[in-house]
Structure formats: structure tokens, C-alpha cells
Amino acid sequence: MKKEITLQDKTFVPFLDKEKINKEIARIAQEINRDYKGKKPLLVGILNGSILFFSDLLKQIDIECEVAFLRVSSYKGTETTGNVKKILGLDKNIENTDVIIVEDIVDTGITLENIIQDLSSNHPQSLKVVTLLFKPKAYTKNYPIDYVGFEVGNEFLVGFGLDYNEIGRNLDELYIIKEPMLNIILFGPPGAGKGTQSELIQEKFNLTHLSTGDMFRFHMKNDTDLGKKAKEYMEAGNLVPDQLVIDMIDAKLSESHDTKGFIFDGFPRTTDQALALDELLSKKGWGISKMVSLEVDEDELVKRLLLRGKDSGRKDDQDESIIRNRMAVYNNETAPLKDFYANQGKQIGVDGIGTVEEINGRINSAIS
Ligand code: IMP
Ligand code: MG
Image (cartoon, rainbow, N blue to C red; front, side, top):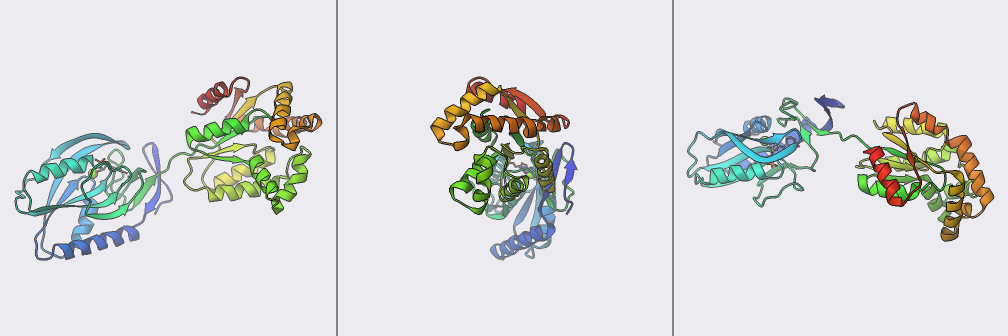
């Protein structure tokens, strides 16, 4: 299969190859041959989507049968319109006939309901449904689907008869839409509110929150090898060596499947880390979408951190000289990253003074 295909404005990646599709079609054909032995079913293909499935299935039906077609339309782009149009009706009398509806995909079931009601009113002997693909999470009806090739998620599929705006039907395998990832770096000096804001953005945009600080604190608390190594650096207000951070991020990225994206909080902190992150992401076909830098002046930050130190007991938040050292480290090593992302056109500055909601509103409009 091609690694990636583009149809108009959308990109699709491999989903089901020929071998897998053929295997399920063969299974369904066997079941129909068995269930309809001695009968003479009428297979009603629903155009246009079911063409390839219909013909592959039909080739493996070895009992006597007839075929007919119905043409309906309900989709526009990647959304169902909920409005089913019958474009071509059945030209056969189905009274006392064993009818099998052959669909490519059942999504909400609105199309199917229309077809079932239409056919039922003509008094078939029996009426069953076979579909190559079924989206159970999207299905809103109660009609049983008698034969299913694959149960799939709600993601939009194309190929093997299924189209995106009428193209892609000729692909002989199935592809799934590739949703662009939203990978955000939330950037700013210690005390700027990265943690609080990350939580909010994570929820709103359904992202995975990666806080290197939290990860290291977790390792320190559990006294892991990584925790022991990180401890001396962190408690002095210095940066943990790049390689340690990068390996930890790499492990996290690899274990997070099915995410809509990541929010990086407190990482990258050096240009080397930023380069390493780009490399890690690009290996997976991903990239950074935006870098949001929270802007707060230093005296306000020191005030906030000392307050947080009292509440949380975090050692690095309790001593003004350690805090000032973190600010100096930030200004020397981390602040230059703004230029790094600005040069890629990805950096957006956000005023970090105000209520949590106010700041959150500014961040949301910066990244949406
Ligand atoms: P339903 O009425 O919501 O069940 O939609 C059924 C029709 O929507 C199918 O016959 C397809 O034409 C179309 N459809 C649903 N999901 C997809 C998809 O993932 N790719 C392409 N077409 C789809
Ligand atoms: Mg269809």
C-alpha cells in the first residue's frame, strides 16, 4: 500500500490491505452460502460505494442468486447530511424474495433505515443486511446488521468503493484519514503558569500533557535511577542534562498512541533539546504546530514562586536565590528558543498577567 495518499485537501494513510479485506469477504461469502443453501437470494447492492465489495462477494457466492441495485446518496465531504436521496430505485418485484442488502459501510444507519423501510414495504420473504464496514459508535438505529466484515471507529475511510467527494473509490485497499496533530509547546519562565494552563489546554483540545518537570518529580519521588540523576540538578535550580530529558520524552512519545497531539510543558529548554525534539517528531511524521510563550516580568514571577513554594513544599520554589538562578538560566539558555521558533513562524507571545481564565482565553485564540 502507498504510505500516504492525498485526495483533494485530505491526507489518508493505510488502514486495511487486500489480504485482510479478502479474508473477511471470503468468510462472509461462506456464511451466506451456508445460510441461504436451497434458497435463491436477491443481492441488492447499494450504489455507488458497494461496487467493489459487491463484486468480490458475488464471485464467492456459489449458490443460485440474483442481483439488483439501488442508488442512494447522503454524504458530502466527510460528513453525513442525514438526508437520504433515492436516485435510482429497484426495477424488480421483491415480493416473497429473500433479499440481502449489500452495503459498503454503515455509519449512522440513516441510509440503511431508509432502504430497509423502502424494501420492507414491498413484502420480501426475508430481509438481511451485509456490510463490509460498520461504525458501531456512530450507529443510531436498532436494525440488526447480519453480516459485518469489520467493525471500525468513527474515522473517515476511503478506498475499496468508498469515496471522499466522489474520488478514491478505485483504490483497491482501504485508507484512513490522517488528522493533523496539534503539538503545542507552552513556553515561559518558571512561575509563568505553564502547568495550570497546560491542564486547561489539554482538556479543551484533547492533548497529551508532557511536563518534564512533573516526570522528573515523579522519578525523584519514587527514587528511580533517573530520579537520582535528575535530583541534584533540579534542586540547585539548574537544567537536567539534555540527553536525560530527551530519552525520557522519546519513551513517552512512543507509548502515546491515538492522541490528538501533545502539549510540551517545560520542554524544550535549550536549542539542542529543540533540535532533538524536531528529530524525534519527524521520525513519526509529526512536527511542532505552535510555540506559545507566556510573558510575565521577573519580579512578579519571584513573588508567585515564593507563594507556590509555601503551598507546595517544592524546594526549588522556596529560596529566592535559587529562584533568581532559575531566572538567569532561563534568560541565558531557554529564552533564545523564542527566536528558534519565531524563525519557523511558529512562535506566539501571550500576555501572562491576569486571571487563569483570561490567560487561557488568550492561549486558546492563539492556537485555534
Ligand atoms: P449513514 O447513513 O450515516 O449510515 O451513512 C452511510 C453512507 O455514508 C455510506 O453508504 C457511505 O456512502 C457514507 N460513509 C459513511 N462513513 C464513510 C466513510 O468513512 N468513508 C466514506 N463514506 C462514508
Ligand atoms: Mg454508500
